Length: 108
Ligand SMILES: N=c1c2ncn([C@@H]3O[C@H](COP(=O)(O)OP(=O)(O)OP(=O)(O)O)[C@@H](O)[C@H]3O)c2ncn1[C@@H]1O[C@H](COP(=O)(O)O)[C@@H](O)[C@H]1O
Image (cartoon, rainbow, N blue to C red):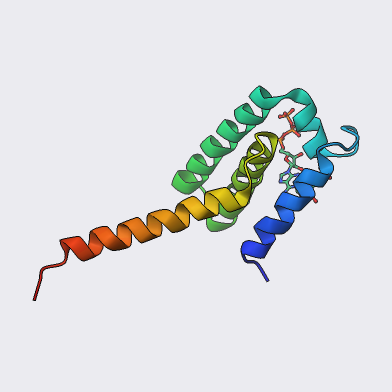
């Protein structure tokens, strides 16, 4: 079943594959080509996701979104940014927006 565990497993796989043989690993190949190439791929996948959202079907969008998240995870790995840091930032924002909602709510 898909969950946050899926992303945690992918993060571990990406960390493990970074030092693999670039001929047998896409993650290793991308890392060997450097941060600029990884960033470029992430940008391409973002564009493909936007196009899929505007012009393609559910299946195509799911595929492009998976490519986008995968390449984001490769970029975070290359920059040594743990997924947990990103999740903690999202949790923090959830708390902040909860406070903003409460402040905006009319008092009774
Ligand atoms: N989730 C993915 C994943 N999603 C997409 N891709 C690859 O991303 C590439 C994108 O295709 P493109 O045509 O855009 O890129 P390309 O032609 O290969 O490269 P460029 O010349 O354009 O730079 C394809 O080769 C896909 O196979 C992925 N490759 C790997 N994973 C995960 O990463 C794990 C480790 O993979 P390896 O490093 O290959 O062992 C795998 O077990 C998967 O879980």
